[in-house]
Image (cartoon, rainbow, N blue to C red; front, side, top):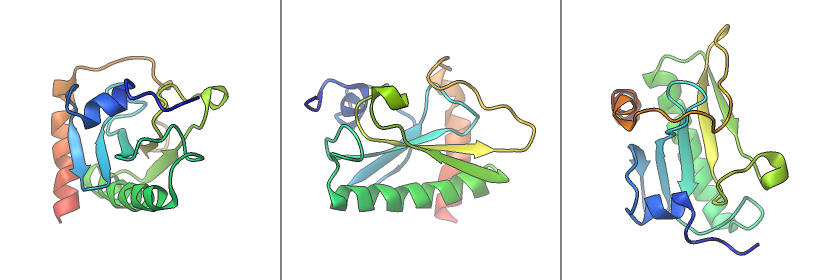
Length: 140
């Protein structure tokens, strides 16, 4: 399958669709998931067009992992999360629904159920206060 430049993450990167940004550099973007599995669910994507980890360059993978680690630390600190789950789905059989490689950063707490992947959309306005806490932790 060839990379689809019309996928939602490509549109976010081009500024055609709004997002609640948490972090951005020249190679990556981290933003709040509008279909969160838990409050504070963040997605990290490379700016390089790649369907999955198998088609991403080594440089792109390194940049995405560095941003994922940085943002995961901020999610943990900013939201006072006891744990952080990282997930990446590669290919439709693995559950990938947007074919632009991405990491999910999901804060976890004991006894709090994890929501289903890509089931319910929240109002993006509710994501901004959570994103602000994460951005604050990035700056600290």
